[in-house]
Each structure stands twice: as C-alpha cells, then as structure tokens.
Length: 447
Ligand SMILES: NC(=O)c1ccc[n+]([C@@H]2O[C@H](COP(=O)([O-])OP(=O)(O)OC[C@H]3O[C@@H](n4cnc5c(N)ncnc54)[C@H](O)[C@@H]3O)[C@@H](O)[C@H]2O)c1
Image 1 (cartoon, rainbow, N blue to C red):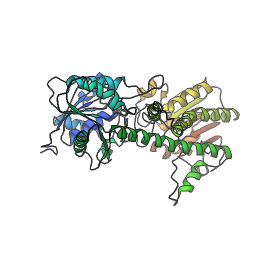
Image 2 (cartoon, rainbow, N blue to C red):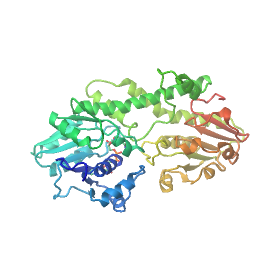
Image 3 (cartoon, rainbow, N blue to C red):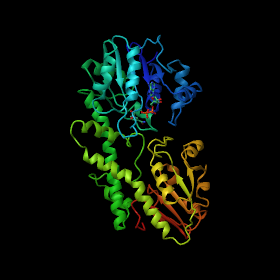
Image 4 (tube, rainbow, N blue to C red):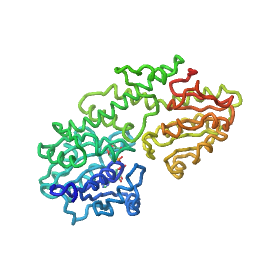
C-alpha cells in the first residue's frame, strides 16, 4: 500500500524537469504519488529513458530508476490528453534576460500548457522563483482564460543542490494560497513529503519569503567578502579574524569569504529588486551585496596581475589551472550556472592574454570543462604539474585534503597558488621555495 492511498490528489503533473522539478518528481513518486513529468528538452527525456538524470544529485538516479520501474513516474514532452490527474506543479526556470530582467516567458508558456489541459477543480502550484506578484498577475489571467474553476498556490522550493532529496523530506514547506482552500489542499499534499508545512497568508507572502531568503544569503556572503577586502588592506588574515571572532561567541556568525554565484544567488536579488522597484522601493543592502560579490573577480585578478608581475621570472605565457569549476563544491554539484569561475576566467584571459588555461573539477565532466573554455585535466597532479598559477575556485573537499606541499614542487617556479576558500593556513604549509600560497582576505598576511 502506498502512503498516499485514499488521498484525492494522487496524480500530479510536474512541469519542467530541471534541478527542482526532477528531484521533486522523484521524491513525490517515491512516497506513492503517480507523477507525470513534463519536459520540453529532448536530451532530458533521452537521459530519463536510460534511467539517468541530466545533472549530478546524490541518490537521484537510484530513486528515478526505482520509481520508473514501479510505474510511479512517467515523463512526456507535453501533457497527454488522456492524463487524468488533478494537480499541476510548475517548476520551469526563471533566469534573467540579457538585459538583466526577470524572464517570465517560460512561466507564461507553461501556464498556457496547464490552461489547455486543466479541468474544473484542479489545483495549480507555482514552485519556480518569481518576481513579486507574478502568481497573481501573470499566472492567474492565463489560467482564467481556460474558463475552468481551479485553485492556485505558491509553494517555493528551498532545497540546496546536492542535498535536495534529503531536504525535500525535512525542510518546512512554505505554502501561500490564493484562497484558504488552495492553501489547505497544497498543505495536505506537501505533508506527504515533509513533517512541517508553514501556511502563510497569501501567495505574495510566500513569494517574498523565497526572495528575501536568497537575498539574505547573498548579503551574508558579501559582508564576509567585505571583511576580506578590509583584511587584505591592513595585512591580517580574514580567515583568522572570522574564525577567532566567532569562537564561543554567539552573537557573530560571519561565513568564510569566497566567490558567490550559482543559479539562485546570481539572479534572485535582482528579481526581488525588480518587483520592489515597481512599487517604489530600492533594496539598497541587497544591491550593494550583489555589487560586492560581482566585482570580486576583477579585484582578485588585478591583485594576481600585480603580484605575478613583481615575481622575477614569472613567464609571459604561464600555464594557469582553475580548480573547481562548478559554482560550489560543498555539497558537490556539477552545476555551472552562475559559477564565478566564468568571470574569473574572463578576467584572467584579459590579464594574461598569452596564458594556457587548464581546468580541473572533481564532479564536472571533462567535455563540459572543455566547452567552458578550459583544457580539462583529470587529476590534481596533472593540474599542478608545470602550472605557474593555480586558482582554487570552489570549496570541494578534495582541495582542502590535497597534498599541497608535494603538488607545489611540481609547479613551474616562481609560482602562485591562489585560494578563494582559505583551505589552508599559510603558516602550516611547506611549499616549494619559489611557490607562494595566497588566500582571499589574507593577501598581506603570513598566517
Ligand atoms: N536549482 C535550485 O537549486 C533551485 C532552488 C530553489 C528554487 N529554484 C527555482 O526553481 C525554478 C527551476 O529551477 P531549476 O534549477 O530546476 O531550472 P532548470 O532550468 O534546471 O529547469 C527548468 C526546466 O524546465 C523546462 N521547461 C521550460 N519550459 C517548459 C515547458 N513549457 N514545459 C515543460 N518544461 C519546460 C526546461 O527545459 C528545464 O529543463 C527556478 O525558478 C529557480 O529559480 C531553483
């Protein structure tokens, strides 16, 4: 017997099988829902036909294979006319346009697909991150045009890539309904996944919670990066300042500085800002945070240009290795969307136009590293050997565990290891004589 037996909304259609839709579909199918996944990209459907996911997420492929086998998960390019479910969950992407504005076209088109298929009494749940007001002002008119009676709620996705399947079963689920009955019905549905549902007053409250959560994370990381700039300027170690400052002291909790990117933080503060500006409010702290986080690649590469220029014998055509191309290393992902390795690489190309660039990543496939514009290397040894500059870009555990002393001896000398993540204390290291280790926020420190 499946755990949803007797529940009226057992058949669910998830539209958009990306990082959010595919993990949600697998988790819901696993607790007994009959899930139809709809995805317009053929390559995603091709991978599913082989029991594979098109991205790295721990446990996902096993889960998919299981729910495909039990018949709880099916997938298609559009909603088949014969589909007789009662719930549509929208999980399409909401990237920024080339002009930096929140794109709504995918939401509009998928809402049109729902409107063509919806029956009286169905429930529609918006899960994509949207501009404030989009559920009411963009989705509702499209669904209204169907002439059907329906219920609508906004229930944001808040999981971390790399921990999605675990967090879908643990995190409180925020639920905001257009009506109380939409909220109650959506709450019942999510209670099969997670023990805690937080019902909020309306869809706008739920939309706002999602956006301010991510803006707050961006601000916290930006403050750490501001601390790093300050420490660079006065010659102390930001890692020591932050670690020592919060040890046993409950009122400080500054994260480590580092590159801030990824598919959510690169866009959500802008989506928040766009919705607020339409209402006459400028989110000044959130925008300052974006500015601090986005200018870091230029600042660091300017520093590296100056530092390497001062090293006698640093080559005109250095080999430069970028380590950790995915936007984060912990939890590990192969997601390259919004990775700060991209702007860092661009700035490095400007600063070192004759350099040869290599890329290493513990998770990202070599073909993708190549497409990114780097010559892929598949071991740490191959990345260090002969490099004049090695930049540790993400916090994958492989970097803090590597035998950096030995690896430094295989580099071209003079050489620089630049660490965006403070994985080591330079005072603990024994590197080759002419190799320097420099960490973000510790440019002038010897700690
Ligand atoms: N990635 C995350 O960890 C995360 C976390 C929280 C919230 N979100 C939000 O969730 C949403 C989805 O994010 P994602 O990372 O899964 O995006 P994604 O781009 O990986 O996936 C979206 C998928 O929707 C598909 N699609 C687009 N239009 C479609 C249509 N009309 N019918 C069917 N499929 C369609 C796309 O082909 C794509 O595969 C975004 O709004 C994002 O901001 C993402």
